[in-house]
Length: 282
Length: 182
Image (cartoon, rainbow over all chains, first blue to last red; front, side, top):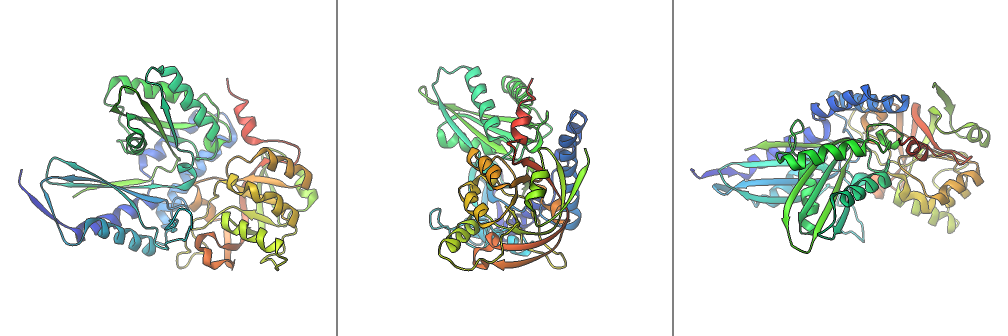
């Protein structure tokens, strides 16, 4: 494959477009999911809540108001083809600048503090958090993913014994979703990282929710597990925004990874109803 | 179920009239405050400093809006998760605040305090920040500008939708939901 040059100015422009889309335009598939859920909700408050979420998406898009006032920590996933030659500034610095510019230009909330204990707001919503994978090919795929604090605070990691049964793992997941209740703003897009090391499992729980929304898991074993978990979690009656109902989980996404003989990490990313990400391939 | 129309400030009689899961359209004045503003208000009260608002009967909205775009009264403004304000709730109630709007569960301690102070906890639609901003007529920054999104804003609201989530009789919307489990 031929080597290709991509200038960091082009990357900055892409980051700007992606952050606009992620903050103001809910993926249409998500709206369709809410609409379908309403048909299955007998409760007035649950149906009304789902209607409010649909209307919120319309207002956000038409009036360029952010979907959520918590415009998130920005997480950038780069899939960088190894035949790509980058030209211009340092890619990480350029991305940080593009994030700061977009959060100013689009009147987005700046929610990042520079130090976790001293907690001074950086005023730019940077730094963003960049994860880079080197992949075959000569293109660069960029995904901008926004994560609000309320749902991030409900993240979980459990290191199971390697002999743990699927029932034990399912119990943990159900217990975590009930315990979190209204706090992560259900209906949830539940990302589950299983395997790897503790850090890989957490990262995979984030990557998991970025899978094409209309697709099932490519592995039939995990596809079946996703469906059975979804069914089980929707019997908890946590419901939309925890106010009761059958729509607790919009979709379950599992991302497994090879792991060590002694360990079995299970990480949960309870993404709120506002699944905010956008992707572009350069 | 139909919506109850209520005007702020909230009197003890109004609080006493509210029960889970009443749906309420609030109008009048409310104040935003998040983690840092709570900490600061409690410190100011302890130090005998004058407070930025007269708290009696007032409603606190746990929220930090996105910046106001040109031509709009306010940016996007949905609720933040309430449990982070639990440690400050007794202090706020003792100052005279009588209602809180947020999202998510409260501690058992806070639920007891609502009963003893005759106060109420409302939740509103988490993550519906663009929708809720349309119910805010005007906003003004009144304190702690240096906190950025965590400053205190005064909002004039019209028919702002909230649901009684913890009332002064021990009612709990989220607990009731889980009891429906088959």
